[in-house]
Image (tube, rainbow, N blue to C red; front, side):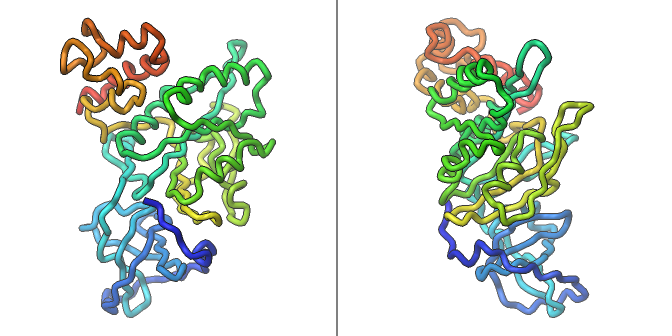
Length: 330
């Protein structure tokens, strides 16, 4: 899905600041890539690498970072989107009132950034339920998920060993897991290689260090890095709108606002089990053809869990997601 671009496009030349005063179009159709959105305004990069501030007509629906569009200029030199090209993939999440909120389009790789959080004398807490939701979303879209565990410099040796154990279930399922630290510059080169020639999006909670990682990957860009709130222990948002960056080795990278919760409105209940990669060898071997792998007898998935062929943590998260209100509503 990713396509190579000429090196000069990486520069992203100076943006044309345009203010519309006329609705008359010049008629010339131009192809472009949406690299950011700010409210009703969109930044569209043309085929030469120039970036224009554009607007879109309501009939096109939500246009997001990564969308490929056809646009034109008014005679006052303002960009207007006249067509959105067909999407290969589309990532969305519910907003605060449950409506679908677009995040990005035409991605082929989901970079899931997580970290570990201190939990008093009990040691660290690993938010694997949210991470598994991202894995499910990636599998449902048919794109490649990669798990990044960041800030490993904060861990003691014992906690590092425990982290290795906690992420083994993903590696054994066939996923790539990278442990990174921007302070130690650890794991960043393998990540850079993973991103090359792909269109990737970084997702994860606020405060896990997404913007710090991207700043190290793209030192020439002015990317703000936030802090973790002392009162809540939660990260402060440093990215307020999704932004697409071109990588010098080829490929694109989208940085999205931090998400503490991630809905799965695009996933059908009957498809959820197949979105757990290691379940697939056992789906269809259960006694009942419509088995949900919860309380049914002679369930091949549950038997695989009991024999440790499927990790208990992954199965527990499947049950948690299956029982969530959003899945019941689908």
